[in-house]
Image (cartoon, rainbow over the protein chains, first blue to last red):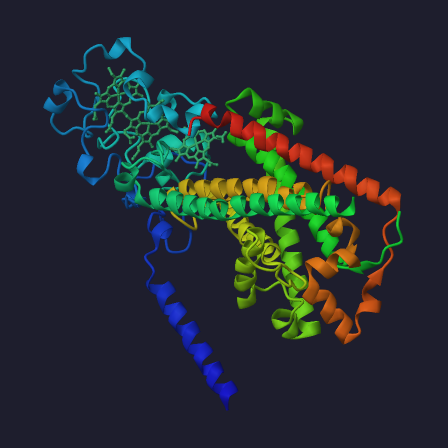
Length: 229
Length: 274
């Protein structure tokens, strides 16, 4: 009697779960390129970079907006010169009209971007991803880093078979501790601080706990020693 | 060696779980830190022990897989115990599952430390031991899960959006940092440094504890064994002195290595590009 009811409840739970899964937005799936319903570009394919007619525009899948939603323009703290430029982020030459560009290193003007793991650990240079001159803004229609073709034109040079989903990895990861990250990559920000809170909570409790405990036993030991004499 | 009575506390299977976990944990800490600190000479030095920056990752991956296998084996062991002993294995006094009494004993224990109350009458497992056990449990799930996602970013980005790798790496790092700090500071302090255990609490290696000492520390446990008549069956021989020496050397070697990692890591945090 109750067994059959609980079985029915289990069935309902499963059906509910299946419904939720079916309605779940297909994150990564939506970004996959599909040639035909049966055979598809799979992630192992060595990219030719020639996708044209099969191309679907990948969703930008934005939990990450460089600089936050309001700050789409202005990666570097904008000089007057820069703010005078129109359509920033969509230029065919991102550095057009910027003085002394040739005489300085990328890191001097873009210190935030220089902290990426590709640079610090693998010593990959900026140009291996951003290309030669003229260097287009990331969102320029023909930029190799445009999310439409980033995976094929850039990532796949080293990560054979990179998919559009893979290319949404945030190469220039913002510092999770920084308050600005709450706007630009909120998930990273909250994940970081939740883990931090867990750690701080654990240690705030157990470090004093261990120390006082040790001290207490120490005092006991001394007292016992005295009794024996 | 005195011929004091020893009370059985850990089964051989449990001791095997602990010692394997301990070795895996030390290797994962070292190889993980070698990657994290690869910009510093210290991190490069640790990496060299395992054959360099690239090889550290290979070691890290396969030892991680062993650790997950150990975790699965442990869960199967739990299920087998549950089947053999029934629900009493969870609800009974021998259970490692947290119970309301633990909270009470925690406050009473703190009261005792401050000289306000009597020592609580612990049963087989104290609340701190339960916490340690479950901390490993959730740590395994979190670090192991994110570790599998990081194993092959190309494959895992087919299951989730690529920016999930950014999150997975941070969760992996932070949970690992929490686990290492907890083990290297608190677990070692409780197992080695506090006067009760100094120089080393061998219960987890030897499998037994002194009956006399347990009467004071875990009064409820010993009393329960006496009342149910299980005490005589739970008494075992002490380990041979040579074995005890081996445990001591092994325990100290692993601890020294881990403390080296702790100190080196802390001294070098500011030299890493975060």
